[in-house]
Image 1 (cartoon, helix red, strand yellow):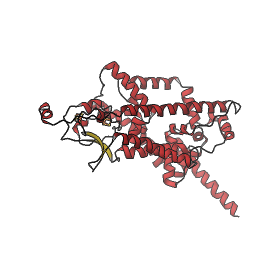
Image 2 (cartoon, protein in one colour):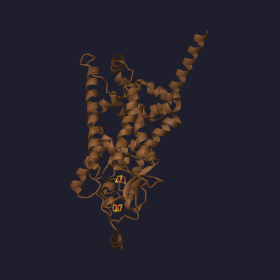
Image 3 (tube, protein in one colour):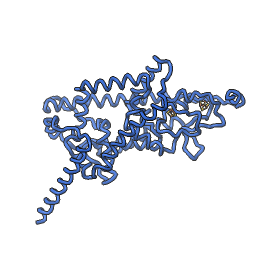
Image 4 (cartoon, helix red, strand yellow):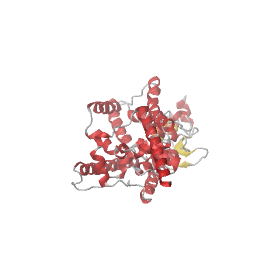
Length: 374
Ligand code: SF4
Ligand code: SF4
């Protein structure tokens, strides 16, 4: 029946050039940028390890982008108090840029800019070559697995919004642990434990047959962007009257979205990768468009929008003097000496401790203020 329908339709061929090559270049450039940041950070740590005697390399502020919890707390503090915390200010701007891009263009950060998303995609492509087809997890297992990332995000929200007061959040951001959390993260990977290595190896191996395993099931960033992307007015739209039900869009979608069954893709898993748009053989049938309007957005404008918004927000952080933190090299060297004593806060007990410390600090401050008035 479907074939009859497609025969009856006047098909105008889609000659628009695919955008995937550009997407690959953007992903590659951002991944190279992250590698460059990693190299600079390595030399900065060498500087600390040699007690400031080796050649000095500035700490690259972009490393803050790898501290999602600290960045999220900074963002929360900004919303409540209007203050941009000085420990990892670049993290605040990167976090803001990622969330803002998702509100405008959906979960595009995942498929355009995120280096982990890029690597997952390359591993997935390798898996496609080996298995010749994409393996889809059955729905009864897919849904519970997808909820894991939301549970992780929920735990973070609960810890910050419910268990911690604003003063406690600030106390965490001021803590020596937070100040050196980037260095701790470096050592997590540089001196990786056997357990962590096994976990990473399992994730890598699972990502070969199961495309985007980490992103789809575990990444809390993906969960957050999945939620904010639902607010985006710009979505993949299908023109039902010109669609020939060829099913190519479904096959191309890395997120297993049944694009050919809907008029507008409303899904927390859609990453605005535009693979579906590129493969659609009929002109103007699948496009990115603004909900409530008939206007389509050219693929190149989506590219420019995603990259441009990200650069604009992070660039504003740079030119406004809120990019590099104000921690001096001497302070870093002192903090580094005691780095092993700053434990990672885990569980509700640690959160309670931050609240207690914050109350204690407030009390001390009040006493000091009163004494100053005497
Ligand atoms: S629906 Fe289209 S844009 Fe969204 S993830 Fe699937 S292929 Fe990419
Ligand atoms: S690719 Fe999808 S939207 Fe385009 S004609 Fe085929 S089924 Fe329809």
